Length: 414
Image 1 (spheres, rainbow, N blue to C red):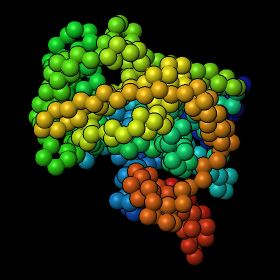
Image 2 (tube, rainbow, N blue to C red):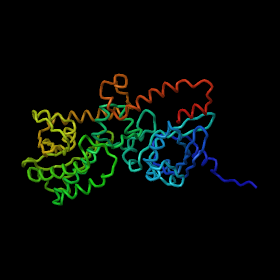
Image 3 (cartoon, rainbow, N blue to C red):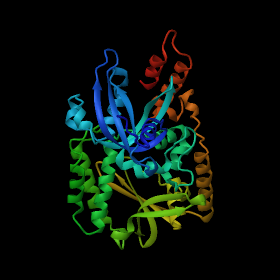
Image 4 (cartoon, one colour):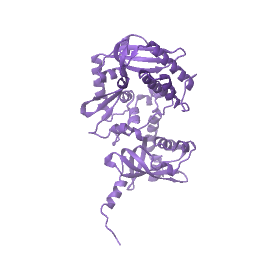
C-alpha cells in the first residue's frame, strides 16, 4: 500500500543540497570506514546556526591517511574531542557524537552528486565573533546587510598581509599558542586588576599562572615556569613601591569596552587596559610585559604607535601611556606618556574606513614575500598555507592521466 506524505522529497532535497559558507554545527553520527588505501571518518552534521539553515544536515568525511591527519587533528581539537583519547591516537565514534564546533564548508558536484568539503574549523565559542565576518561567498564576506564587527587586531593584520587576514578571520586558521610569555602576560594583567581592587595580587598571579604549569609551552633560554612567576611577583612589588598609577574605580576603569558605530552599521570594538592617572595626569593606559626595555627617545616617537592612536581615536582621550614591565634579573618598570593629536585620530578613522571597504570588497591579495621570502613572510604562521595553496592550484589544474572523477575528487578533499 502506498501512502502520500507531502514534503517528503523536498526534505530530502534540503538535506542533500550543496552548502557553502560557515556554520555552527553538531555531530549527529560518526562512522569509521576501513578503506584499504584511504581510511576515513564519515560524519553527519546538523546545523545549529545561522537560523535560516537550522536543523539542516549534511555528510562529509575526514581522511586518516598520513598526509591528511593534520586536518583530522584540527577538527578534533576545535570540536573539543576527549584529550585522553587523542593522546592515545584513538578515535571513538561514540565520543564524537554531540560535539559542537564551527565549520567552513564548500561543495562540488560530480555526475549529479554533491560532495561536501570541510575547508576549516573553529571552536563553537568563536561563532559569535567569526560569524560576523565569515563568508558564504568565496570572494566576499557573508551577511551583507548584517552587522559587521571589527577591531584593531583585524585592521592591523589586514594591513600587514591581506591573505593572512583571510586565513585567520574568514577561513578560521589559528596559530597554536605555544609561547609561555603570551599566556604569562594575560595572567599578569589579571594580577594587576587584583592589585587595584586591593586584593592579594601575588596570590592572584600564582593562581592564574598555576593553570599553565604543565602546559606544553616554549620557553626562551633560561626561562622556566618558576622563573616567570618570581619575576612577576618582583614586578608587582616594585609597582606597589613606585605608587605612580591610580585607578579610581577598578571595576569600571579596567578592561573597558569601547564601541564605535561606523558607516553602514558596521561596528569597531576595542578593549582598553585601563583609564587612570599617572603622576596625577589622567590618561588611558596600556600594560606591556617584555624582556627588553622600550626606547625612551623623543615623545613624538611614542605618539606614532598605531595601537595607542587607535585607543585614543575610539575613546577620545588625547593623553596616553605605556606602562612597561621589563622582566629582567633586576625588575624594572617604564612609565612612558605622550599625547595623540586630533589630526592623528581623524587620519586613523579614515584608515579604518578604507581598510574595511577593501575587506568587504574581497581584496585578499597575497604578500609579495611568497616569492621574495627575504621580507616578513618568513616568520608568518600562515606561510605554509600560502605556499601549499599555490602548489595545490598548480597540481589540480590538470588531472592525472587515467584518473577518474572520484580519484580526482579524493585528491582535492585529501
